[in-house]
Length: 176
Length: 290
Image (cartoon, rainbow over all chains, first blue to last red; front, top):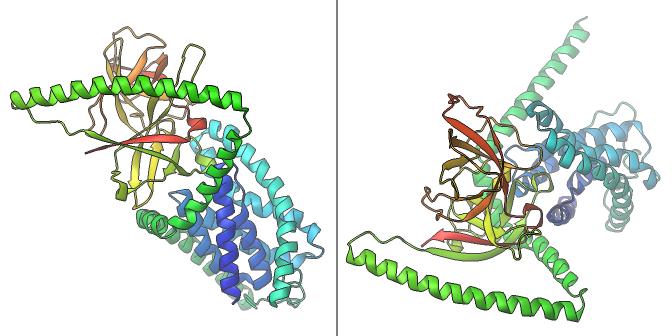
């Protein structure tokens, strides 16, 4: 049930990301949903979702290398880190991890761009999309948390804001 | 001590496994990219076409924001353009039939014609906005790798109307979609001819060149010791099997020195400004061999 629910959420998120892409906007919806799912359901599920849906978004975007997949894996690991060290309530406080998670898909491209010396791409395309991604992530993650937690509560599924409670001090479990 | 060394061994093993996983994932993805692209594009085609359908609906609604007078004027202009094009087409068809008959009489092999497919963009990556995009037609519609894609040109002060100009080449094709490499991306290589000086060069033939600052495209291996003019039109040379000659590519903006291995003062390079408007591409025409 939980996997079907998240599969539908991810497919909707990928559709939104592709729609925004057709209008020239890089909206990092998939990586934010991975962050949410990894926090709510655990690191193991987060990694599995990253591999499946990261590859899907990479193929749809036409990349020759799975950049987005690695960004999603990074978001899943960051979710584990954030869950163990920070507060998850209220939803509004999550603008900061939203910014970090949203920046990951573009940060993975940065080393390759700098090495290739393509400064035109860096200044014309990468930087504006990066700034937009930070703002979008800061706004989207709290909204996503509030919305999906509301739905999860009705469906009796794990919530993002309750994830910290399920984590005992020194807990090394990968999944719940 | 043994506890510490065991911890270090575990950490090293974890790091090694992570690095190996990254390398394997990248290699597998790269190796199976064509399979993944075709499978996911065909399997998820109805799902993917939703986003382009929504985008098209939103764009179409913006037409309704214009006044009735403007729309009526636009319709009149399009009607007159249509009639002019129909007249030119009739003359061109006559010339084609005459050419066919002459070839038959002289026992020269007939050149197969082209099919024209009118399509729209299905998906575009914002990080590769000018380099690559996916269109809504695929192998089921007759598109093959190497087919050329034409788009409307930029309309400047000196032009009265937009013409169709070369936009890119089809690289990969699935059942319902095709991936197009645009000229400005640097990956599409085409033979080109300068109309005034009748010299032939190759677009994007220098793979080591860095992308230019102002999105100009490189034209390599032009013969040296010839006079070239800035603003000279550049058209397709027709050397490729799927690309007819004479299609507008762009205009020369600068002649620069050679920087290739073969730079023995035999060749010079040029920068050309593509005629196709890559920022505002919406409707495309794809040519495929019959």
